[in-house]
Image (tube, rainbow, N blue to C red; front, side, top):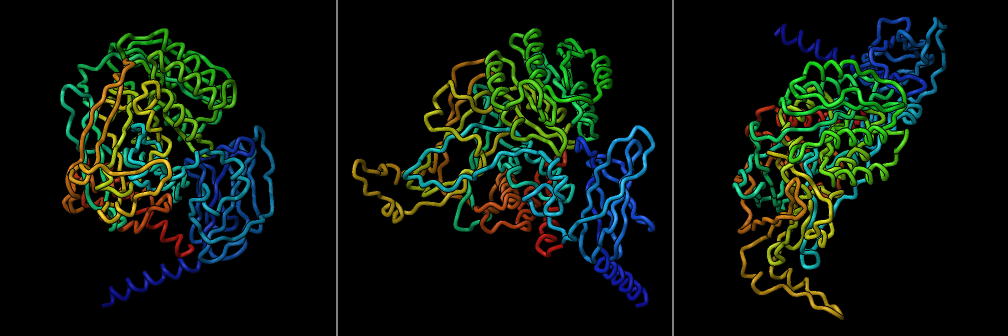
Length: 617
């Protein structure tokens, strides 16, 4: 009894402490560049309270008694800054961001007076750090994301075809994870639903020998709307054994500009490339091009067996200067062409935060250049790094137009996923210009909505146009698409007849008799081909109960629901984090590398963030 009383007292005291204290948090940056200053120290003067900035420059001092304080930030090589009259209120967060000037000589510290509001913690995704961000940092936060206009429902009687490019990019998921691990919700437009779904591989059947792709279909209940159904379409690329892989001609194009001088940028980038180097075959060729204020070839093409030389070259790279990205891309493609391996895997691997500002810097100019080069058989892989000035929209478009893929590397485990665990799918394309077209039977489906793929939509006429660029699929890759559908009934079909002056819309009698729900057609080209091949599959029968659906179906549905919650989608229906957790937990299946377990942890974190937001903490 005494022990229980002791625990109760301790627990009650901790609650009282939490409720009677506040927090101070913010970011430490360099005054001119806006770059984070990890490891800088922040102290509340005349107290024992303080903190150190993390790798991104963020700090938090917890359990601060209410009052008015002077706070100092300092770091070797920089002039210290002290902010006075900082007010802390119980159960609230006061945000104080510091900008430290570089100093080559001993200088007196700078003292300024705080002019800040004390604010409740708001983890809104409408800004990079919610409403706690001060306007000085917002000027330095130059991350860019294209606006996503979510696809709504289309009536099958009017629009029976849905056409889009296959997409295996997964950068959006790892980028959003970076936000969540910093206890922030990502930008809504940083969440691309299809990239969340395609971050994970699924246990689909392998293609037969004559085709490089298999088509897998499933039809069941929609978890977030009981009146709707969900259709799951999965593609699986053929696997290329290591002994049958063609030799690679790779050019590492590495951004070493000043903006890459951050632990999460160039140092992480070098560690990532070292992982890739260890996977090379002796017949592979590797060249390294770097760019900053100027561009240069730091390693002419070396054999894959010269791993020590390649790694030593990587170790010597240092960051500094402006960003002549366009010139770097031009040189990288030039080197790739000079070392071209006929019938091999010829590829430029661009690693950057995307902040080009010298030479060819506009996205349109770069896109035109890369489009010209892809027709020469040189593909592009884009690896994004860093935060604060990350150009997601630019890197995604470059990868799409360069017959390549786009990944975001936020930690060394993600580097291992992309460049070790999934190396063949990252580097070896088995199908290019892959397009998917779905035709719905209006007697079975009244209306449909494709989840994600907004920036990969195609005109229906583009499906059979071999000049239209589409998506690329790597060896062993899985591509997954989900359609939320509303079933058709006979009485609804009668209501859907439109009285038009010049045409009549009818449903064929055989459609009513058929058990077919839809037909999926896939068109693709061989990696070095110019003419498309086509395969197709038909979905037949009624939907099955959700509990009888496969792990593939339920886990992909959980990930889609999670993405809609982060986007605060108008189509999220009854989506909630508890549903996501339950669905994902029961469909985790084989999780060799732990990616699905990590997803559950992320969902738990978002659950707490949303709870804090609702409670106004």
